[in-house]
Image (cartoon, rainbow, N blue to C red; front, side, top):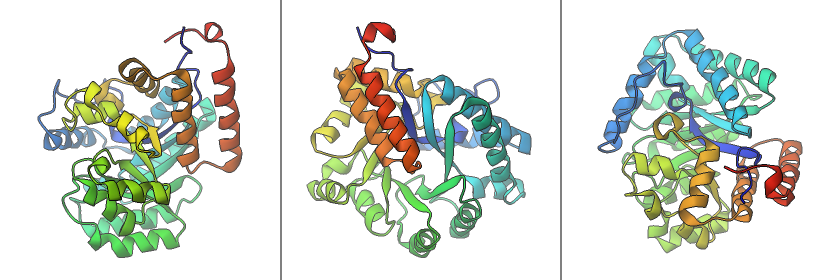
Length: 322
């Protein structure tokens, strides 16, 4: 009998707000994406549905409600603030609305949520500077900045933006090793000064990059169901997650886009259990790794460590099955 994975205290580090919006308000994703470009087309259609301040506030509030119901205790939610503001001609108002929704959601559910503001490499460079300025204006709830999207364009043009973010005390979390190879991970570490890497599934292709990740103790936000849904990995069983763990990498588990995969974070843990034969101790290790990799306050980290330990030592029959 296995322990209940909703009851496992969880930290969610890689999830995009636009890909959490409840399905009754956005176009449904296709049954199969033909590639990363098709995924971008769908996310663009979803973003077009977010128009009014109330839309952003509702999405953020519902993220809190849905996450808390799934046993998530702390989350770092990614939001593309500058692009929405530019699209709507409303500047920082989408961000302000998201922050309002998070404050209300946290108050009503008890979950703790912080934001990572990202910037797509397909967008104008000046928007990245705007993003950093927005992040610096809200140090209470915005903890990070990252470059995301198609990894083909180099990170070099963002060096000054990255430096400005670091000087402002903003953590740096970039997508890399997802749509491009291990060189993108190396660039995220060196040019991007990454403290965590979004995805990083192709890092294993270069032993030197693996060694650098280990030496720097940079955690990877791994999203198996997302990688399969977008066509970057052929099937769940082919995912490199076990090999990444065996290589000594600091691996955490996230959903990335639960509205597409249909999987909550608990369901993502359940898939790792079912597909790779992970034990409850293995899953607790993944949960602890997410706590350690997070930018949560030290007191909350200590509380989560204790609660994960309690979950692991509780007799399975007392917490049910999943």
